[in-house]
Amino acid sequence: MVFDDYKLNYSQCRDLLIKRVAERAPSRIQLLAGPRQVGKTTLLLELAERFGQSAIYAAADGPEAALPGFWERLWAQAENIAPRENTAIVLLDEVHLIHDWAARIKGEWDRIRRKKIPIQIVATGSSALHIGVGSRESLAGRFERIILTHWPASSLCNIFGVTPEDAVHSFVRLGSYPGAFGYRTDQRRWSAYVRDAILEPAIGRDILALANVRKPALLRQVFSVCASSPAQIVSLQKIQGQLQDVGALETIAHYLALLEEAFLVASLSKYGPRPARRRSSPPKLVTLSQALLAVVDPRWVPDEHSEQARFGAWVENACLAHAWNSGQRVGYWREEPLEVDGVLEGSWGKWAIEVKTGIISSSDIKGLMEFTRRFPTFRPLVVCDNVSSPDVSRLGVEAISWRDFLLAGPLKKVFRTRVV
Image 1 (cartoon, rainbow, N blue to C red):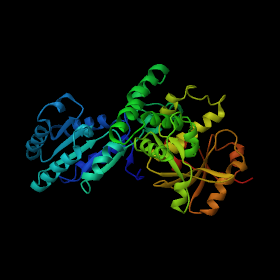
Image 2: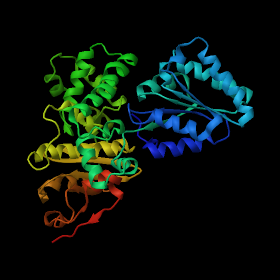
Image 3: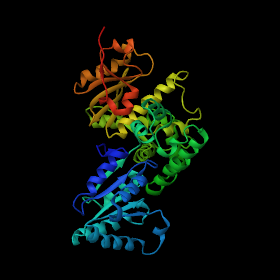
Image 4: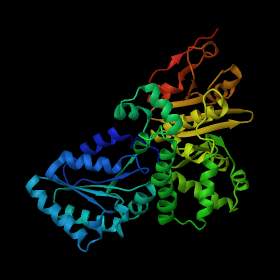
């Protein structure tokens, strides 16, 4: 997976697309990828409404797409609109469902470039798998990829009007799928939505349709192991030992990569100066939406007070997933017995973070301090319950509450604790 600043939330993605389609046409094709049910179709419809008669919205999964001549009529309509409105904007939803879609868009784009017809193209797919397979092979040099990621907690505040406190608690327990948010008080309906509209289509259709999956049952089992191990470092051998359908380690590694491409699970690598050593280290498994943890775990969401260990693991998973979804390069570090929960690089800067709920002591940050001693370009940061608690204040390192971290990352409000 490519980590960059084009992994955006809904409002950032909308603003960027508005800016790009306003460029002189025809500019490069905008390919919008992302998880299921995060608002890609809603975004295209919003653009269609914004640009009015200049825009053409076409859904490849709609009934009209199955009619003969659909493709030809679409581009003929765009060519008619372009001179009248100065620019035509073609908005193609679920483009991967069109047979040989990448080659067909390439042909149209090359033609309108050659004829200098002012047409802009925005296309969406359900995952990086869908967009990546065709774009990397057929559209090299002709496209820019934007990833609309899982919503951050701040988007729940902005869109649904909930308080920041309610947003982060809902984010940790149930994730942030906008379509599921209205069902959050009804466990049965909420679970059915996440399972039927998100998880099953992603694993049962998206990955199987576009990747080499010889053992679909094994793929599901690998995902279940990942979702049952939030923010845990797990060797491939240990994953293999938990599977009913045993597969080769290479197959398991391949399925982990597919789950990451589908925005379900990230396999974090160990940070280190030598790439070969990073690749040979066991991955740290981070489920990219808390909703997936909740729908898989038969115990349902953990109670903050009576299940402190499990709740702490969910908070750590939420913090690392938030960083990954925000476009940061996320890893971990471990040299027995020392460990750092997260090593972050990107637009936020370079941070080594320790995520800790409950009481925290100096022994809990030994790994953090050793890592930053070896790699002084990283700033140490404790992500905790309460930065003003006495146990945090005496540590002498920067600290932030996990609630603030989930709202805006480490730059929202970092407190310098004092040494006593």
